[in-house]
Image 1 (cartoon, rainbow, N blue to C red):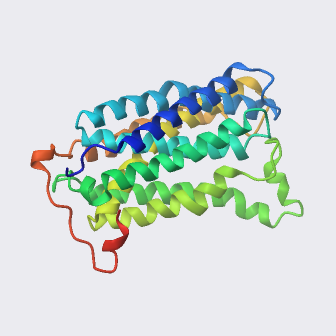
Image 2: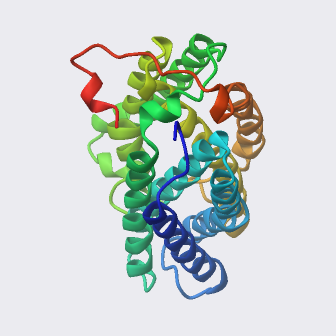
Image 3: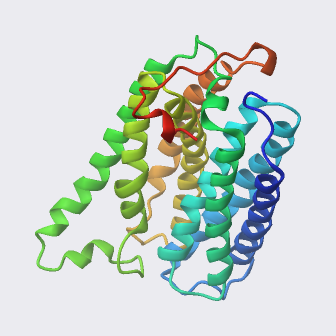
Length: 291
């Protein structure tokens, strides 16, 4: 079926991801003795747990149900929710000091990564791309992605580069309770390059650009909400801390609202199975890499 239902394996593994994510997040939120980092970072981690429980898992569960009912748009939000879990599993593991929930967080990371891969292979990137209407505003959305990538990279490099010439560059991490920042690492090494390149594919209306950009855009919306909540809860936990800021709460709420626009524009241009179009052919050197 063109852009059809995902496999049983993808569904089962995604359900297992949700169960483990609920367990890890609920433990993080409910047990005051679990986290051993600075109070602000503990509050921030609990903020992430709140969004995991209140937003990401419900989006994942609802998307899985709608996808099995035939919704192609739900396949995109399913992937977006899983990518949010991947991203924040890494933060639970590497931006939080070692704690008793470690193995649960390892399980959450492993299950979410494999769930994304099983979803991709069972549905097929070219098949899902075929569900996007020819009228999807791919160039406008690609430009939006490039702007976000540039601003995000600039914000991180604006902090990192000056610290590199400091006699004590590790001062950049003061107040976090960890040796390095997993946000900087995964954003600069993985997510921002992925989205910059995917936006180029999207601009050319390639199958992989349509699918990857749409899924990560959905993930960005949830992550913007998450940043807003974790900054607020971190500040409440320690109003004197400089590693969190209540000034970021409203801007990231606004970013979440703005981010809904390109997600909506892409998902509203997904067609029913009987109206689906053939995904554009890729150059011969790329066609074998699309899934």
